[in-house]
Amino acid sequence: MKKVTRPDVDEYFLKIASVVAERSTCRRHHVGAVAVKNKHILATGYNGAAAGLKDCLELGCLRDEQNIPSGERHEICRGIHAEQNVIVQASLHGVSLEGGTIYCTHTPCVLCAKMLVNAKIARFVSFSQYNDDSFKELFQEAGIKFDIQERPPSQIGYLD
Image (tube, rainbow, N blue to C red):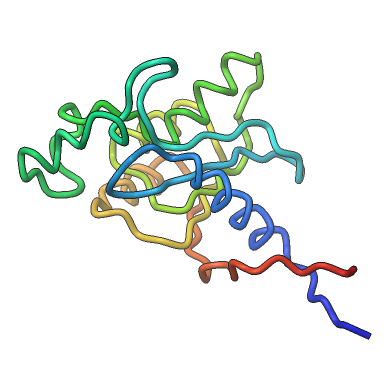
């Protein structure tokens, strides 16, 4: 009989964040975020242009054209970060993220970290480092727990 290992909760939601990231329209990083509370998904978000607008896959990357390094000059980008989108999606559906956990493929930039502090999340879990670690001090001051996990396997265990 084929043995399938059941992922723990963190691995499970990080895998889901990885699938959400596949919707990204960014040419540099595919980032996905999942907001969770009491083991239930509240909202998801990925990085890309505002809804209904042309994206970088269609128009090209402004940051690449101007040789802007990752983690700098966020205002040049036409995209919205996954963490911002997960907050927006929750608000559009009247869902509070207070006390919840954000599972994200990358650690947040300082702008997203500020928004997550104001959303009153309790925990942030990731498996990949973004090019900006100034979020750590903000999270520490706000009492947000932060965990870096192993990158989850990309395979899905099926029992057929």
